[in-house]
Length: 469
Image (cartoon, rainbow, N blue to C red):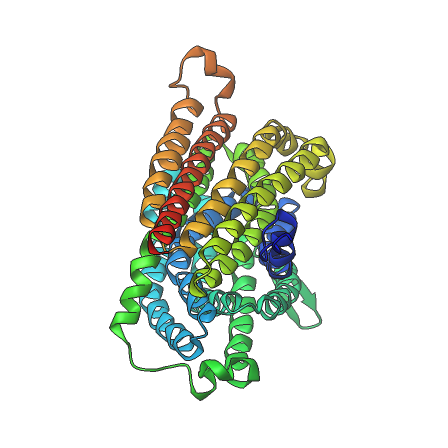
């Protein structure tokens, strides 16, 4: 008589466990991306100058925020393990300590956003674009406290398998953001009340209002919703700092934040360098960048769900189940991303037409779409592998792999090729295409490196299990 297969023993079984967690994360992240997508669509029809300002300003903000976000998101694998082990009060205490971490990171982030001169010097933008970038970043500096708090809420809530609550709040934030962006970008006149059009800076103001609304609702939910009562959060969110808990968050969060910072800066600095090529080139890059961000939401959702389930399995001492879920999630993510990338590439003319009717901007973006496809597949592979490794509390070695592959090959190689320092055989890759080609190569290397590291981690854990049996 054959033995029954354990849960998650096949890819279909794993998909059945991953999908219920992944789809709310996907919709919620699409709502988050809707913030920048709406801004890009509105600004693309407003002016090329404001679109360039949005591209540079977004690159600077994302560079600052994602590193801070990565540190705060250490709450997710830590709480996932505690939740899997049934230690709910400890999970709630860990969330409280993450709020102190948010306060410390806030000081660093706002200092950079309020004084962005180093980034502006690199981008070498015109005075008109620079003024709009500064105003945009000032508004986002005001939104940063709410954004960091919501990041901690999101990491905690997804880790305890309640992603739908996060999704609803993110959709609500988008519902607030869309009309506000339209008003602040284009201005309005209603009887005696008028507001002049603000362009790109208006996007930042709309984002700040939406994020504070979202964060305040999340705060009320933690205090009043009975779901969070077993975690002890109904008695108040603030406790004295507990330095061992904060140290544990930093030990995992700093390399996580470093990895995400390297990954994203390898991408955002492309916009800053491409800005040297003129407003049309950076506007075309902005369309491709927004498109890749939209496509990335699928592997990101799968990575969040897979990482959560792996962390919970580790906490429940189910090492074999953690290994199966990790590999299956990686395989599913890469296959789906290949199909999505193919569909976008085949319909590239129609897709770009949704953003703008400006033939110059479309011509600048069109050659990038093949690289977008390849970039997306590699991005999916490295993201899934990285999230599974974080669930095993491994983050320092991935950070080293990211630095070599994404900064070294991707950003350094892109600058070398794009600005004419490469051999004549690569002359056709000068300009924005050079950055995209090198960035894709860097992501392929990081995906292979992280997958190899994950295989090594699994072998070590399997040997330890066999030795202890």
